[in-house]
Length: 406
Image 1 (cartoon, rainbow, N blue to C red):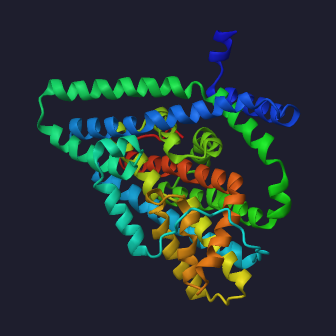
Image 2: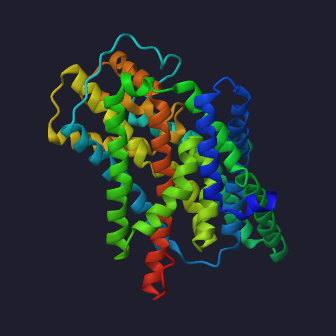
Image 3: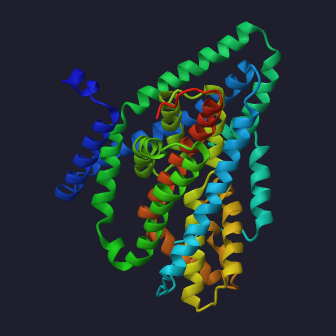
């Protein structure tokens, strides 16, 4: 039975875990110990991901032979451009279907402190960059981890071949541990789905269904229309095989783990399966988890416009475009702010003169619908990291006359 189970593809096993978890959540919600499977799985991924990123980035830079800068420029451009597009799509969807809410002193955001300005976000990012490297690893501060991994990697370029090989061997060992953890994904997904189904129920859809619908439609448009357009125009190639593969293998796990950090190892494995250059994706994937924030930009824009509609504020097109730009750059700072994208909503609200008290009530609504909002946001953010990393490398392959694998 174990051999037959292992012979099935990971996606099939995850689907089985998903279905079993949903059924158990509906029929036997009292079996709370099943939740432990999800907690252990996400915990294991979060634990190994910082070490994986540090070792892979440092090893890749230490053993790099040079070149590849054009690919990095392309990746960074695609990350930022797609994030801006996501914010613009959110503006258009909210204009097409404006949502107003009835607020009554919600306190779901109590205890959180939203940043007051863009300068505060930038300062948080700089402080994260220069954090103690050991502390950065312990607290999964990926901006700090990336910075110190680059520094160590560059310093090791002058090391002896034996040292460089030892770094490569360590990277391989950590990658093997990651594969072992990922093989447990079906059981982890089972526990996570059980937890969501047994505890959340369907109340979210009835109370704030309209807002949830706007968020879901926005993110589906970005995932299935905008991102494919960007990839298709860049590669002059049918984008959907790549899009669906990334959504299936990265988006599904990100949806249930609701953690970009936990999904970094999954994305690394997917890049390896696609045949991408490890020197490239070992840097671009953790970088993407910091600056490639399509879902976060959509969330900031949607909640800010919902707050404006609720307050009766008039939103002009230039103001909406300015909101898209602010949301784009703010989204890049979500990893450096406790509470993620929701805590940056007041920054967007400030453009419309909305008080911080009302903005934080809107944030409270965000925490209530976060079971869906955060899942969709993470799935979009994480899967697009692989999509645009692959797009940048495939563009180089086309210039070299190489056949694309998808």
